[in-house]
Image: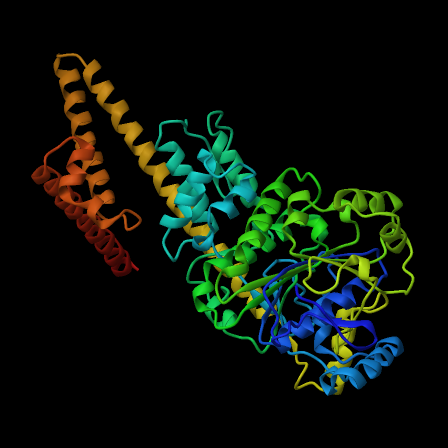
Length: 556
């Protein structure tokens, strides 16, 4: 970040060539020290100079950056803009930004009232990579569980969703000969429960369970999936991702969303026509000092991507902030190429910062109590340094989220004044559509499981009958029993071959006469004749039913 001093100690991120270079910026200041306003003011500059703006986190669940779609109303904010507009021109007059708000689908989305114009979206299972599955399962990338999940997400069809995905993983595990037959647990995707050797399956089901409620992991051809090509070519709008209807209770789900968004921006960078600024407010929530559990995987992804993304795509920058310097992962702090320090609320945090960066008494005093309120010390710039004293930053031209604001109330107010620009939206139809899609897949899997259970039961009966046949004696009565048993066995075998031939859930190539013959221990021609014989039996039964019905009508 090359910061050039302007009039009255105001600064901007513009270099001497009139451009904004790609940087990773970290802002540290206590609560109430205008940290959010400074961040929004910097985002203003980036957007004005052609950057595509992504806000991928909303840790306070207040839709903070969504307020940029409104003009400011607070007297202190308007007074600041009047001062700034006299210095840098009319673009800092009160205004607003074009904002698109995105929220993942959840069953907790209100459907009994109109809501602001959210873009409610789903995420295709097939788009998830090793890093996403590592975080959800909380095991490292080369682990067998992650390999299973990754293979399943790559190989399921475009029509298959969460239930099919879970059963694909189960079948992969059972294919290794690790499982005994158990009853399906339909509270857990219909997976077989209580299998002692299915350790991987337990991890998989635990990772997927939250998404039965927050059902935004969907099939590849779901019409609500994010359109990355459209998003990454839209520089006009701020792209603000929120998750307030999911809430803090499902922290792992909301953290997963952040990781997915960051990974997806980089995976789809071929669509970019503009440089990107990725904004991550309150970074310590996502990358805490010494992270553990799922936070470890999230922090590793953020650290790795922030370190390498500067030269990717058309150029990528990041802007993060935190109230406490010491609460942020140490490696991540080291990846910031520019750091801004306002007053810090904790003297221990001041001492830790000064010790880590080698600052003396003068800087310590400035960080404890700034000589001029709302000024920041700057580190990692070509012109100016912390020793030069504090600088002031421009506030955003658009509205800032104040503590007493409520986003939905603010949006409704603007809707009443300008319904065309701020339309309200019902999500009842979408919610019903998603629930229907989810239920249809559940029912499809249930039918498949029932058919499989029936086949297994029939096979067990056949084997049992074979054993009984071998036990029969050689006298006439026993011979008759043997004959009857063989007849029944043949009919059962005809039926099984016929059912396999006509089971559309099995791949057509696996239903050839040769494959059926191999399965039931006969040759290709015999399998074909069995199928034809059972087909005739079925037609006989249909004829009998018709005759009986006809005779009954005649009697009446």
